[in-house]
Length: 427
Image (tube, rainbow, N blue to C red; front, side):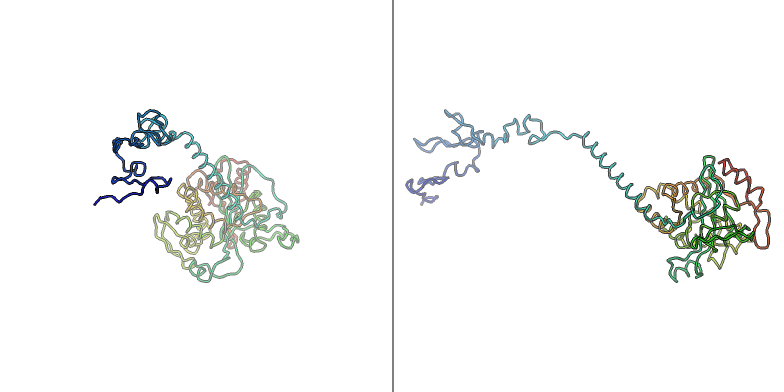
């Protein structure tokens, strides 16, 4: 019995591809060319024409070397010469495969750099407009009347208020803020930014000042000055930021260019967002009113502790003056912490800090992000020893009010107006 099934007769094969055979041998390479290896098999029997081979670099043409041989479309299939190249290594045998050119690294680097720069530029612009839109420009200094002439440099009035805006009852209890309605100034400072060193001057809230003529910020009504003396923080309580600026300018003769205010909650949130502020406390103290309980030495204060630190006054003999020194010290340290590369270059830290700060700050209508940045970097410089930090010079007291030393104040203001190095010593 044959090992191979009988094929169809030639009469029944038709014209289909891979014609069957009546022979007891399998069909030729035309049907099973995929299994052919090595040179073509010799013809089977006399008179049988040579079969096409796919192992000799030929295609559907005649057998290699036969007269009229045609290489066909598949020439070189089994020798790796798919594209007719020596060794199957591309058009010129370069080894890059399938004719692929070598990568142009210079071009890739250039476009990578362009892409990175474009992304940074778009991110910077988007961040600027996002931050600028969050500034609360609520103070209109154009309402301030009878203003002194300007001088060299830029003067900021920085105010910490006791505003409880947005705070829950639990937060008020935790931060020891109490629940008083409205807001008053807890701290006031003048920051002068100039070419001859920056100067940070604290204005004690109990400073004795004259209440000048002013125009009501809401009513537009003019209130004539009567020569009455008040504590400086009472000006803010009477008619808000515009009257406070008017009172400071009237009693110092120094023009205020920008106004910045922050409340209790905002202050604590900024400190927490930056990850706490490192500060060295010279002497241990406690104050049940502010919640302060500090040991001496270097430590990191969180938002709650920082607020207690800058508000404490009952723990000190010279309560207001000592408190202003602590406020200066801490705010300068906070500015230093915010302006460090670890914050500025870390988006996971920078954006929460900016969000917490910008949501909390109340500024004048002409304040821009550049002005705000200049203020922070100046405070950082003061903390680093590049500027002067002082209290307003005090000559004595009148009742519970602190009286400024008029001669020293005049010299100080003249030096600031002319952007000269400050030589006046404060208390």
